[in-house]
Amino acid sequence: MSSDAAHLHHQLPVDVSPAALERFFWVLVGLSLVGDVVTTFVGLHLGLAESNPVARSAIDGYGLLGMLALKALAIGIGLVCRPMLPKAYRAIVPAGLAIPWTAAVCINLYMISTTF
Image (cartoon, rainbow, N blue to C red):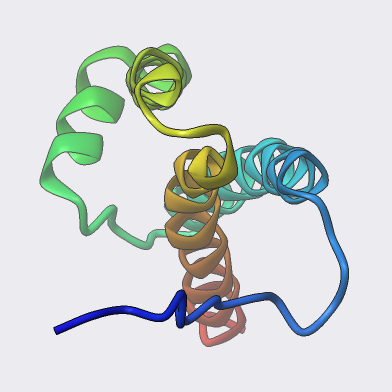
């Protein structure tokens, strides 16, 4: 078999640099972190329960500081792992944090809206 230099290249539908994409996701990490913390504590104040057992334990034991410590730990692990990736793929680290936290914000907002 030979390859006559035929390679598949996957590109984003828009022209965006890996650095710009990573920057976008880090901003989304910050926004989703704040949104998740705020909506979680609003939901708890309204009588809802935290469904994540690790987060529930941290909140029950240490309140807001426990939740922030969990978030800081997740970000810290991401920052430690980030240099292990090629520069083109480093946006996966903040995306892996931002996407689930953004989903949590949406779920929290839905649950809060059902209490009224």
